[in-house]
Length: 80
Image 1 (cartoon, rainbow, N blue to C red):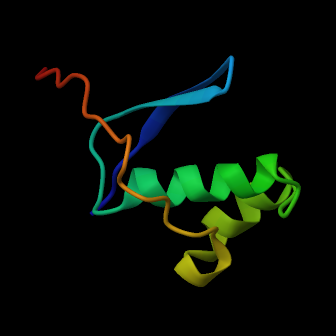
Image 2: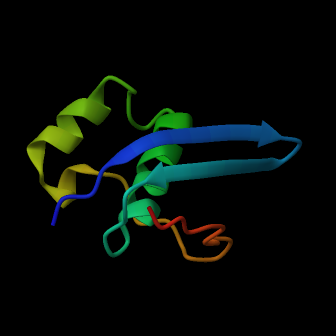
């Protein structure tokens, strides 16, 4: 199944990071894996230049850890 993310917005506000993902659908744990990988970039454990290679490899083992579901919210669904 192919799903496309067309926008990710990341906002740091006080001690909270908010990440909003916009796309045509999401696979099981997709957003949690992306969040875990982006957090690894933020922590300096991965370089941002590695993201394209991680995605191109199509190997889950190359990505960061799966972020916990705590705090994950589905905010809106739009049917076109």
